[in-house]
Image (tube, rainbow, N blue to C red; front, side, top):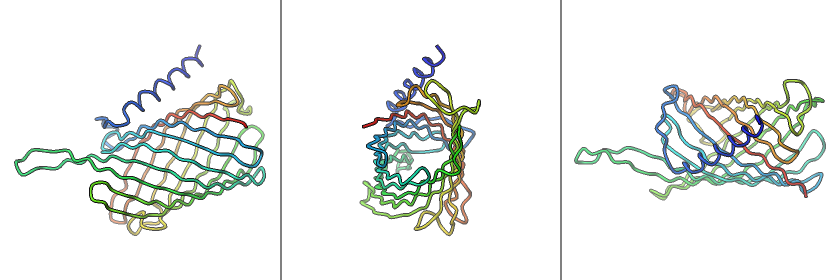
Length: 254
């Protein structure tokens, strides 16, 4: 019964957040910025060496965040051995910013700004050290980010480096398997390569803790909380963001 309720709750939350994907939620979270994410991730295991990963997500701004966005990504990965793999991918993001503007007659008008992001990436994955009942994974990803703005036909380019270390397992120290709960925890750090921040190299730190359930070898779902701090510039105070994420993971073996 508990497993069924968990599954129904995840599907309900995914449905609700997707239906709100074009709305701004008026919610003050710890007097800061927040984000609510719902993501569907699909992995196609082509053979022992190659896999294709597809994901789509809705990202809602909470609290002082004045935007919503949605996006999708495709990645192809080449596994070399049990320790190393490489992937190449592309992501598209559509971001809708909301800004208040005071007109000449004193009325407050809301202006929508649409930004399109085109993001190719290259990544190295390292699975080390290997444990019998849990996983510890490192990811080093380089992202090139191309932006286009609808309101003024503006163009922009940025580049960043992301490093993530992730650990996943069970509290009873048994291997993650179908019909079992699991935890996920990781830390990720973003670094400025080209114009990601003003005179700052370490841009962002993001720390996650999550809990999920594996229904079968092909289907699992988890809910996660992220604490994120971002430094936009040397003379700008860091921005704290609280992120809540619900993820549905689906594997297809060919």
